Length: 156
Image 1 (tube, rainbow, N blue to C red):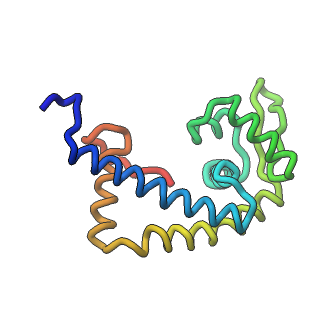
Image 2 (image 1 turned 90 degrees about the vertical axis):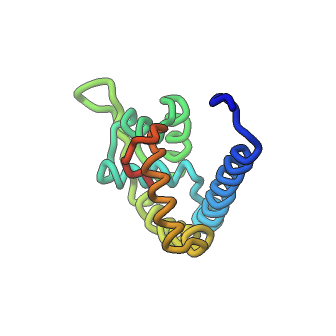
């Protein structure tokens, strides 16, 4: 068989994997959004500000960490600013912009963390055996960068 083609079993596995991820991720996001009003993007922005920047990051660093283009992030941050979740301030040293989580944003994130954790546990982790966890970990480490020889740990 040509390496550029997939057989029926390979396609079936791919669709199962993709569908499973989308289903679990969708349920987690839905529960979090229903309980907190935060969208997936809101949560990602707030979480990265705290995780990678101790509450503050350059806008470009934030965009890079999310794999979003500048325009998409800028529009999203404008909506978040209107809701009081973040503020932006120009940097004195260059043309950059600093994105800062507000106390309301930090409170929303703190409220969302246990809800997201509970949903992740309910829809994903509680469904796994120890062997499943080990296999998923090995697979994720191997495939993170698209290189089967890679052994990096995937980001949250």
